[in-house]
Amino acid sequence: MSTDHSEDRPIRVILPAGLPNLTPAVARGLLAVLIELTEVPVLDGPAEEVDRDG
Image: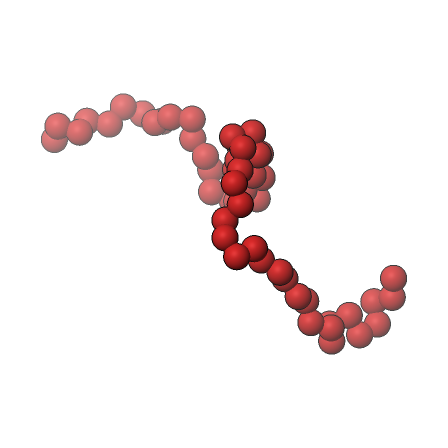
């Protein structure tokens, strides 16, 4: 594949008209990919106990 003039060609993205139905396994997989791609740390739970009464 030649890289000459590759910036001149437009990129076409075709999206479905509606949201696809996802199985729970596929949804978990997509969520795992999004978590890996983000730089925001994901916590399993609160790092420390929070006093919500005060």
